[in-house]
Amino acid sequence: MNWNLLAEHVLAGHELSDEEGLAILESEDDQILELLHSAYQIRKHYYGNKVKLNMIVNTKSGFCPENCGYCAQSIDSEAPIQKYRMMDKDTIVQGAEQAHRLQSGTYCIVASGRGPTNRELNEVTAAVQEIKAKYDMKVCACLGLLRPEQADKLKEAGVDRYNHNINTSKNHHDAITTTHTYDDRVETVNYAKQAGISPCSGVIVGMKESRLDVVHMAKALKELDADSIPVNFLHAIDGTALEGTNELTPMYCLKVLALFRFINPAKEIRVSGGREVNLRSLQPLGLYAANSIFVGDYLTTAGQEGTKDHQMLKDLGFEIEYPTPQPLAE
Ligand code: SF4
Image 1: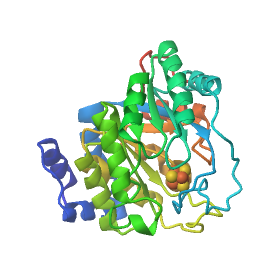
Image 2: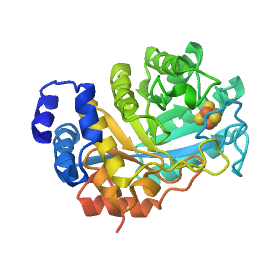
Image 3: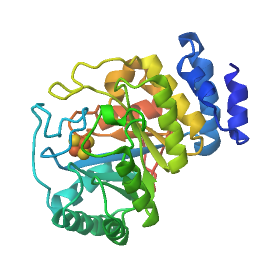
Image 4: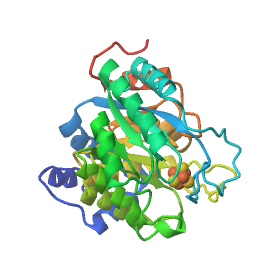
């Protein structure tokens, strides 16, 4: 396959077939630089050398009645994580200060659970109003399944983006979770869109899905028109249903990121959870396809230090996209 030509076609509006998607995932490892170069032509067309940073605060940990097989916060998980109830407004606002220091353009307020209670929603909306008044940053909420009126309330408070991942393909969904459906997840993304909130929805790769499932996930997100697409790579946690699953290689992760760029050329593609453990020494190469990363910690696992991420971006010659440009960490 001529990857450069395919990238030119994508820039001219071509949509990848399943066969072309599979060809990316099944390409030989010695083609990786050509593949990434082509993905980078698309990424550069839309985003130049800019990288967006996102920082997560886990405002409520554990106690979730759902049974997502990858999640340490599920009721079925025996992982020894720290569990706590919803943070108060002031603690959530304090997290935004750290996001600001890390030049994170988006602050992601996340809570475990099937969906938010009224009290939890009130705590989040009060925090969002204060954060938006204080900082020039985008706020993303990730609170589980929403009802339409809850999406409206988040919009009114100033939430810019709502994250709800499809996680996997429709075909593979029931092998991962049975307490809610794939369509429930899609419905919540659509409620956010209907409320006027920018939709963020992504995937977790490495959960025993087929390669065709991965192609279909990327296409499903195109159809959903997700503005922001977090691509997580499974970091299997002991005590979860997927404990011991370890089927990813750094090269395969790079091919997945290239695939998502080819299928969703103009969208924000974020190398997300599991970046450090799955891409390992090849992390910097991921940014030739993706244009966004998380800084700080993930929900129940630690990320690498923010200064290391800043250094990586500087070494690559990339610039942080932040409302108020600041010098990178020396
Ligand atoms: S992913 Fe979310 S809904 Fe699923 S078990 Fe974890 S916290 Fe609950």
